[in-house]
Image (cartoon, rainbow, N blue to C red; front, side, top):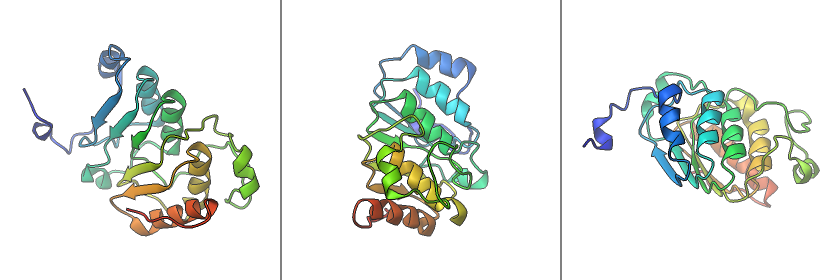
Length: 192
């Protein structure tokens, strides 16, 4: 029997074909922890396919503990987060790596890259809202200054109870996202 340490951490994992087919057999699965594996090659579609097969998940951890993600830009975008939340409506824990330099897909009313506070109350523009997630782990996800406001607005819309973002790199940019989220909640929160 192999342990998690027997799996080479540098390997990329792509959830397609036989792997997803095998997971379909575990539709009642509540927790999936593959945080040590590199998920850089997973696309938004791959995340949607995985989440669509495991709709009863309460906890999903994919690739956020793997530093090899810093060598290759993740194929997934914020669209992967949206796809997972849309399919897995019971999620309380989410660890996911994505390319934060790509703006979220269109879906909410934005003014100058920022959502007005009044927009957030009615912003279900991405078709999903999960009030159970209070902490999001983004691991080594890249993010750029140009997308900070739109990602914060998207996160507030799709995860209205989000109060903490845990990151392993790019602390300053993720701290700005956290501060924007905090401003929607009457004060900034700490990034861990």
